[in-house]
Length: 129
Image 1 (cartoon, helix red, strand yellow):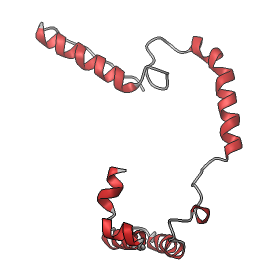
Image 2 (spheres, helix red, strand yellow; image 1 turned 90 degrees about the horizontal axis):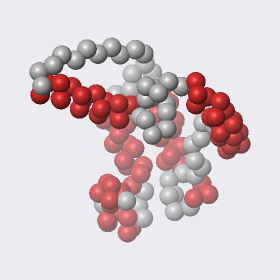
Image 3 (cartoon, one colour; image 1 turned 90 degrees about the vertical axis):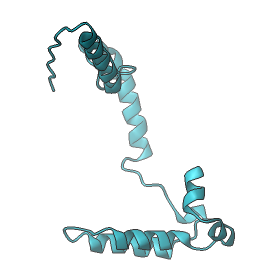
């Protein structure tokens, strides 16, 4: 919410002016579209300009790559196969495992290397993707 108050001047918010159209116009001028994408951006810009009444939610819909039904089915399938997949995943696996993210592995590796440097030991590392 703080970011929105910084971007939208108070005067425009109180007057309910069409600030979004102006922002998109500025972005369009700043950005140089390569490979002929400029026409696509201009089409989107025209559509946003036509429906710029931000106070009416009915005029806008969320962008979704998958339908809600598909998301529900995906969740059901993931829950059903989780118990069968867990024994197949190695203990060392960090990516795509709950509570064992890649950032945790990087932190552990960094700590290990720092300690090895303190006691002047060599660290050999092999990353397999």
